[in-house]
Length: 167
Image 1 (tube, rainbow, N blue to C red):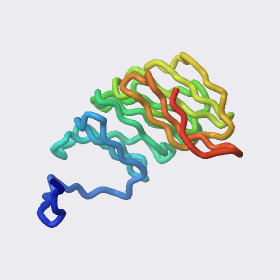
Image 2: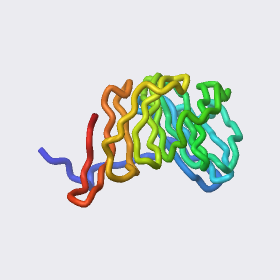
Image 3: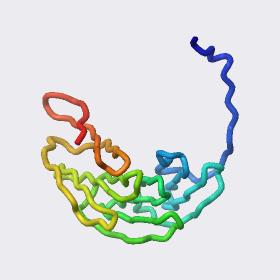
C-alpha cells in the first residue's frame, strides 16, 4: 500500500554551519561524512555530527573521496593525490599519473583515477599502478567504484552515444 507523503514527517538529526563547501561525501556505510571547504579545510564527521578531525589541505585541493574506513583521498588542481587516514594524518602525497578525477574504494584499498588522455588507472593503497584502461573516446566526468573496486563504473561519451560503462 502506498504511503501518503502527507503522513511522512522528517526531523533534522543535526546541523553544522561551515564555510562555503567545495565538496561533500558520505561513506557508503554511513559511518563518516567528509566536508571540503573552498578554503581547503577537510573536516571528517561521525554520523552524529561530532568531529573526527579537521585538517588544512590548501586551496589547490578540489575534490575528495571517502572510504568506509574513514580514509580520505584528495585530488589537487595539478593532479596530485593525498591520502589522509581516519585520524587526519596525511599518509602520502603522490602523482602516479596526472589525475583529473579520483576515487577511493569503500574498503580503502584501491584508487581509480581518470587522466586527460583519456585513461582510467587503478592503483593500490600506496599509489602503485595496478592496471590501465585506454579504450575511451572522451574523458569521463563521473566515476564510481564497488567495495574493493572490483567493478568500476564511469560515464562515456562519443560521437555515437552517451551512456556508461562498467569494467
